[in-house]
Image (cartoon, rainbow over all chains, first blue to last red; front, side, top):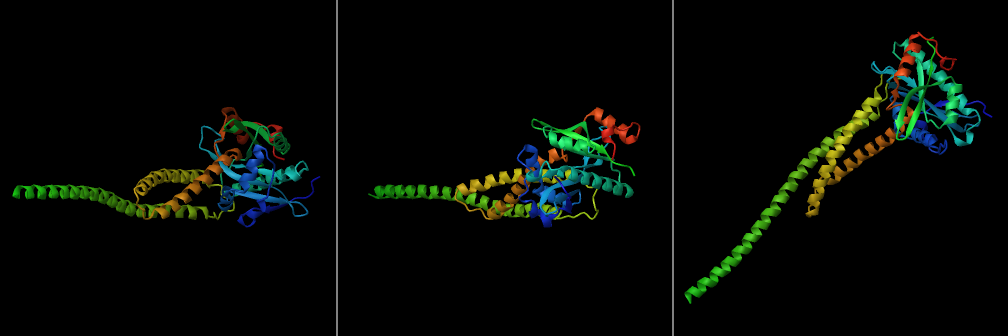
Length: 175
Length: 173
């Protein structure tokens, strides 16, 4: 059973804490494991285009991580791409899976996305009121988790080799 | 007798002359390659200096920290892609230059500045290797290559424009 989780902002000072992170061996888990240890993750954090949180349990053990980023998806095909918030990755360490931590992390990320969206609006930035994500089509657990957090599936996707990643999105509050 | 002496002298001169000409031709050939190598080394020194520039630029770019708390205007994907393309072009050029170095080395020359050149090429290869690794994982995360179908586009337009009630699952909590 999950308890409380404590988020901590990820940056280069705590990059060594994810060296042993293991969210499993499935194709999607490999992506989750790889990215947090990649130069890309640190660069995006440095450039403030992505926020990453590490989550710890009451015993200060690393449960997993979650992230929010900004990108430009072609939401409206006939218009220039507009910035939209995405949830690039959410991972729970294998030993803590199926204990409700994913739901807690997802909920925290949605709350943070909401705050970021409102902050951006107050600064006059033209951000779409959407939070989007891509998920591996065979990752039924993640799809279920995101659905429970208010995401719907849509026909936007990323095709890589034989995998057609599924697009999901949820609206964010305007006020 | 005088004729015999003259004939022997002619033979000796011809032999020496042939050997001398042959040596001269060999020297000419070596000299040409040596000069080419020297010219190559000088150009390589300049090219090394030019390679250093984008590498320094990349280092500075990677260390940038945007002041904004969360930069919604950042076009990092496009910029990163353009930087990668530039390094890819440099890598292609460097491979051709490396081929030239190997040709000179196979003829017994030690090409000055080649050690520095190879060190810089290694740095470029590392940048491209990391970029390929990132590209491989960026797609599934939604940073690259996402497409939206026309029907989804129309749905989003209606929802965001407020002209349609969002389905229950899309409604904010």
